[in-house]
Image (cartoon, rainbow, N blue to C red):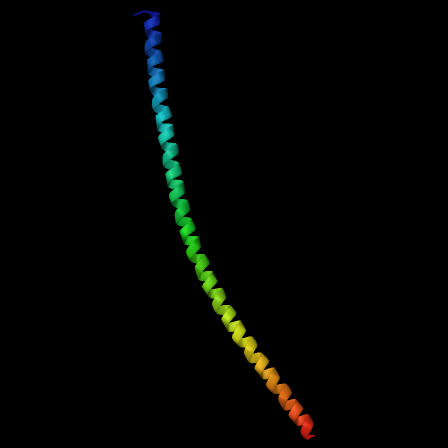
Length: 90
């Protein structure tokens, strides 16, 4: 075996392991992207559900506040009516 044959064998070994390394790197990169997208979609779905829950809670709070505001307005109106009635009778 000559030096030239040894270099050819060494080059073939380096090229084959380098090619396998490149393939493994490409596959791991692709798998990482797939997993990242899957996790991202799960997180988006979870946040979407939480957002809808918060919107529902906010809507309920808004309804309660509106009813409370209307009730206060009625009480104030009735109070002033009674004060005017009392003033008229006095």
